[in-house]
Image 1 (cartoon, helix red, strand yellow):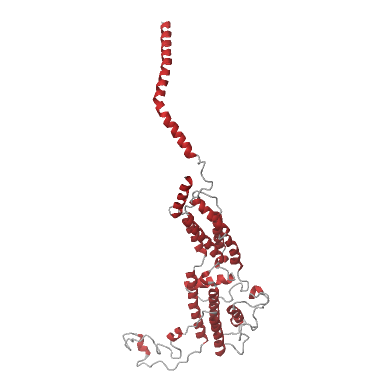
Image 2: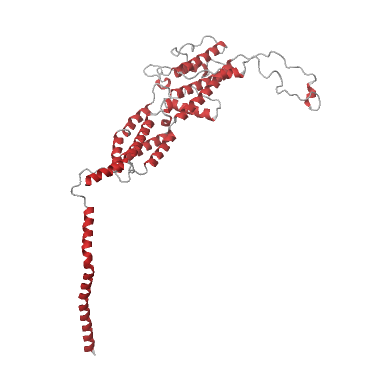
Length: 414
């Protein structure tokens, strides 16, 4: 039996060994017709993967490459101009005082308070932009410059053309936090002009003569005691004013006072208003005798700040400030400031101080460059505009640029 099992296993083993070559031969016969197609496919793949031997060395650049080249031009051009502009923005005008000469103390509305705060910031910064005086705003400005520097210096990438508009919109939103728009600057000046005209009118009224009553209150037909009860005595009166007419005949009508608003547009206008206020104070007896503050801003004033102190007067090398209104206001300080002020009337002194403070604030707002121009922020804006232009020209991959590149590539591969 064992011999039979061995022979059976041997016969089966040999039959398997004999059957295997038949299967291999059969499989080879089945796949042999497909071998030429497989070889052709491999050769075609190799041909597309390898560059053509006769292709030109300078292929036409794609959109991202063109945009990257434009960014390098911006890095050495518009972006490089930010650094010197920053030095100008932080320098300021050393001929100006290092802070407000007069400080307004009267309660103001919201718009007037914002205009005064803007003017005070300009005064503290000596003509520099208001954001220079804020550590938070300075950090935002430096962060914007750093981000732009990293953006225009980045390496080439096939994704360089994507997300540019959203990136610039984000940077512009941060720049809007620290920049003063032209409309905002014009609004501050308009509000401060109206507030200054009101304070000038208030000072003139405070220095005006006290009106003398010209007639007694009208007599009534019944004793006043009967008027304590509505059911007794006089009938209800339709008059809204208890005594006298509706206006004081010793004073001009309010309509006339409203139309007589002084012009405050130029330095000459503001200097004329200051002279008018001083002349009114002298005419109405609030300045006893001839005052040291009488003529021009070049005349010395008793008790005024010494000219040699550049930190307080803003003088450089013994020269007066370039701003005539501020120089004149400094000379008017002894009239209303300090215990030895020449004007002794407290009401007039307070009204004049408010008028002087408003004129000073208006002068700061008026001498700010039109539209709140700032050299550093203007250089940043120019860099962003250059990036927008380069992106539109280089990354127009669906327009004329792409069509031209495809045409060049097709002609080069022929």
